[in-house]
Amino acid sequence: MSSNKIHIVFGVSAKNTLLSSKEMSDRIDAVISLNDDLRVGPIFNLGKSDSRLKRQDWLTSTMPCQEVAASLRSDVSSDFDTIQNIKAHINNKTEIFIWCGRTTSDRLATARLVYELQDAFEHLRITDIPNITIQSKFGHNYPPKCLGVMNPEEVHLITKYFKKITKEECDMWSSIWTRLENETGLIRVGKANGKIESKDVSYFDELLLSNCKEHFLQASRIVGETLIDIGFEASDSTLNWRLVCLVKNKELEFEGKLNGLNEYKVKRATK
Image (cartoon, rainbow, N blue to C red; front, side, top):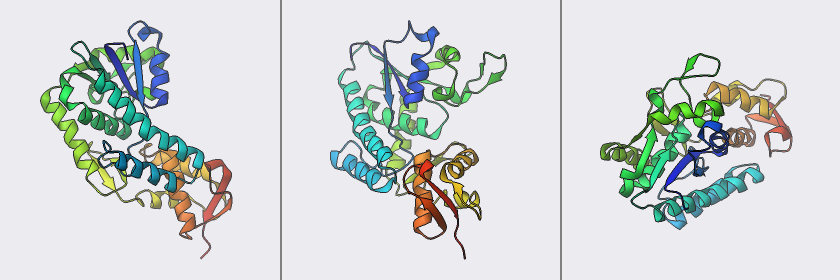
């Protein structure tokens, strides 16, 4: 990691968006993507190898699609190694730019990152996205939700909103992570007031059921409608897991293979 200006984004789509920005190409030396979806699964003490293994084993045993589970498992170890590498290469000239959006996944990952880098908080710069409004290429103003859903040609408009975080802000982000990692709920969602809360694994089940009918529908359709209903507060892999659980609990009937979303259909169970 030779660059002293490190840009950290959350998710592959966010990285692709930033790297596709022509306006940013001469300002970006190093772009790092953290990909572990911290909205689901155990997150306690991820600095310890046994805790990371517990998270990996949970993801592997829980997610019905093993191809997805393998990718999620890899993200756990990859993110840890990446953060350790960042910590090891911080020097007096290092500036770390954290592209945090409004989404729960971005804010969770930011809280974890700031917690891990709190001893070097003076090197951190963060976007103040909750207070940003930018003008799109079509001329209208809008509040960007996160980097991953922006047009690449609009990304440079965010750069002026980066600011150094204060010790108080560092403590605030760190306290969010400390609180959540010590809670027992395995699903984390953002509420209307901005607070992230831990919930039971069945949190999305009723909404999934409400989108199911008396006739078979593709699982991908059910999950897609539910994602819109919840404002994409969960991933499609998380909702796929919950849909399979509803089948196993006899609340839904299915046909096909309980694996990927395009491999099976579901309907309400016959009473």
